[in-house]
Amino acid sequence: MATNQQVKLLGFAGSQFVARAELALKLKGVQYEYIQESLTNKSNLLLKSNPVHKKVPVLLHNNKPICESLVIVEYVDETWTGHPILPSDPYHRALSRFWSRFIEDQVMPPVFKAAWNPNKQEREKGAEEAREALKILDKELKVNGKFFNGDSVGFLDIAALTIFYWVPIIQEASEFNVYNGDKYPNLGKWGQVVLNDPVVKGVLPPRDVLLSFFKARFQSIIDSK
Amino acid sequence: MATNQQVKLLGFAGSQFVARAELALKLKGVQYEYIQESLTNKSNLLLKSNPVHKKVPVLLHNNKPICESLVIVEYVDETWTGHPILPSDPYHRALSRFWSRFIEDQVMPPVFKAAWNPNKQEREKGAEEAREALKILDKELKVNGKFFNGDSVGFLDIAALTIFYWVPIIQEASEFNVYNGDKYPNLGKWGQVVLNDPVVKGVLPPRDVLLSFFKARFQSIIDSK
View 1: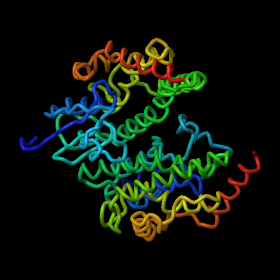
View 2: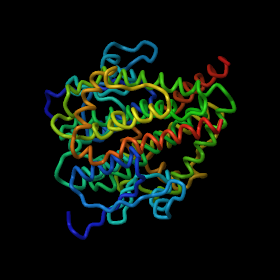
View 3: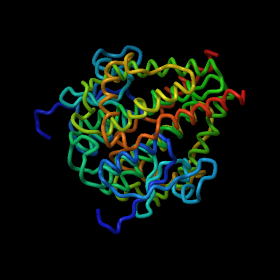
View 4: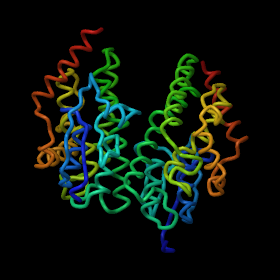
C-alpha cells in the first residue's frame, strides 16, 4: 500500500460487524486508524459517511466511505493484495456469497428476535427459527474440519464468525439456547478451526465484557415491558 | 465459451428475479437452455439444485447449481468475458453491492407487504415504508440520467429493474401507490434509460400478462380473508 493512503475504520467495541471489517484489514496487513464511535452520540463523520443506515462499521479509504460489513470485506479483498479472502474460482465465490446471505437473512434475524424481542412468545419463535436455519447450515455445508475455502480464513469464515463467537454469548445473556457445537457437528468443527486462527483471535472482544454488555441489554428489555 | 459447456436456467415466466439472471446471460451473449418451472409442482431438478430455498432462478453451469439472482449475476460476470456487469473500480463495485442490498432489504420487502399482506393496515404500513426507502434511493443516488456505471447496463441497473418495471405493475394490481417516476425524479430518469435498453427490453415479460397475474394474486388474498 502506498504510504500516502489513509485508511480509517469507524467502529464500536464489541460489534460483530465491525470485527468482520477489522479481520479483513488485518488479514491483508493494512494499517488503519480505528475511530471509536458512541452509539448514543453518533459523530458527524459517521452520520455523513453512512447517511442511509447511520451504522458502523464504515471504512474510509482516502475519505471515500464504504458501508456494510460484507461489502467492506469484499472491498478490502479487491483493493489490497496479499491474503486472498474470496476464493479465486467463480463457483466457490458464488457459494461464499450465497451462504453469507443465508447467515445474514436466515440465521441472524431469528437470533436477534430470540434475544431482544420484548415478547417472550416472539423470542421463543425466533429461537425455533434460528435452530431450523442452523440445521440447514449444518446439513448443507460440508466444511470438513477446515476453513470454508480450505487452508486459510476466507469470506464465509468471516461471515460465520458471528455464529461461532457471538451467538453463544448472546444466548447465554438472553436465556435461550439455539446453538452449540455438539448439536451441529459440522458447524462445531468448523467453528473450532476459525476460532483457533491467530488473526481471528486478535479481533475477538473479551468474552466477559461482551457477556456483561448483552446481559444488561437483555435486562433493559425485560424491565421495559 | 467452449462449445462443450452446458448452461441451463431454471425459471418461471414473469419472475423479476429470473429476469435478472436472463439479463446477465444475454448481456454476455451466453447461449443457455431455459427450463420452465411450475411453482405449484416443482421439479426434482429444482428441489435438488436449490434445496435451501427451493426457488428460481437457478443457473446450472455444467451441472453445478448457482442460486439467488444477484449471486448468479456476479457469477455470470466473473465466468464469461464480454460486456462488463460490475464496474472495474473496487469503490464503484462496493457502491453497486451496497445499493443492491438496499433494494433487496429496504425496498422490496415493504413493496411485497404493501401488495400481498392480507391485513389492510399492514399493506398501508408497507406502502409507507416503501415510499421512505424510495425517497432515500432518489436522494442519495445521483445517476444523472445514464446507467449507474455510465454508458451500459450494469449490476445496479439489473437489481433496480424490479423497481422500474415490476413495482408499477404490482401497485396497479394491488391498489396501492408507492412509485412513479415523476415523484422520484432521479429514479424516474434512471428508469427510463434502463427500460429503453434493447437487451433489457428483451427480458421484460408483457405488461398485460403480468398485470393479470398480479391482479389474480391480489384478489385471492382479498378473498381468503
